[in-house]
Length: 147
Image (cartoon, rainbow, N blue to C red):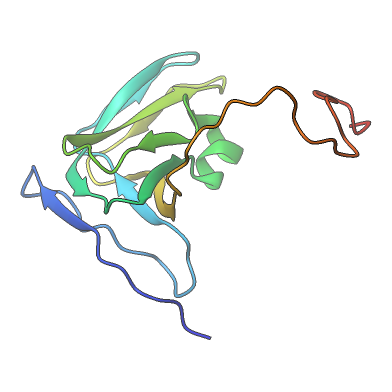
């Protein structure tokens, strides 16, 4: 069954920036590519510019995720993964990358560095109460399920 399509407007801030597109039908995210060559030494992190800005519609947010291949092969991850892009932000998307690997990693201009997925985010009205409803889990936190 096909999904509804929404528009997310974007602007190239660099004429060489790549149009955000999915690689395969059914992909949930578009690839983000770097606008300039960057080398990350082991343990180093950097804000890597993509050369694009987006206009995410109200009621949605963008989430920047690491590419699984980079994570597995080189230890590259998104520092604040997932990175959050609010619908009101109109500046350049930069990806906060970190090198958890043991060797330096270089990304050339145009290399895919992360993924961007747009998800619906409900507007929430916060209501203070004296008590919360009970659940089977209760206040069980980190490791409470035995893992």
